[in-house]
Length: 155
Image (cartoon, rainbow, N blue to C red):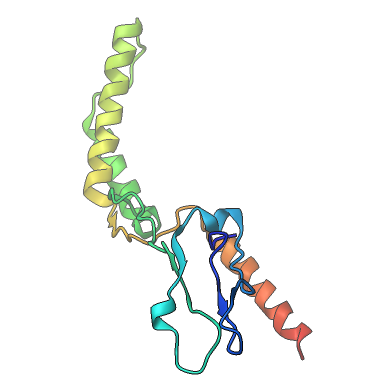
């Protein structure tokens, strides 16, 4: 119940008695977003017996993390493969690694090479404050199918 108890919502025309016949129900989830719920007798229109109820709900959209990210879908993978091959050919030939330090050095070199290639060739995605990172193409197709079935059921 969003409207606090003991607030009258009706003034009987004949007797002038105040009673409560109107209620404002909401789910627990919605109740967390209600900023105010109250009657406003001063804004009661002429010749009506019900008292207006004002409910203020917080409907601000939560903003998504605005960090830029890589747009892998727009990457020119042929160019990426060519540049990877060029970078690998610039390196000394492969050799057996003798210890952990050599392995870690080789790994860091390879990691740095790919990091540079990604920064050079993979475009950045334009972040949207309304993006839903959990949404994907599969869900879009399922939603279209559900809408089509809903439309067919009403024909």
